[in-house]
Image (cartoon, rainbow, N blue to C red):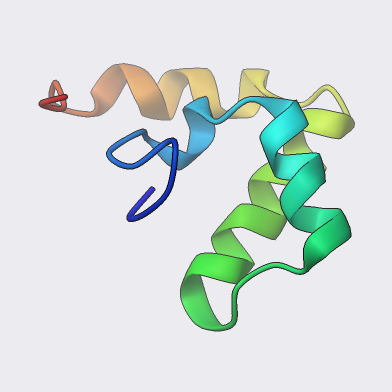
Length: 63
């Protein structure tokens, strides 16, 4: 996440409560909004298992 309380957090690791707040208040425009909307849909529909394999392949992210 490039800004705010969760700056530096991988988008897939954002809490559902934050994603729902963003959804209610308007997602940002562009690619970031699309990614946030996508992970919101994945999380509220219980489909996080599709991301586990991809996350295992990511290099460690500095915090």
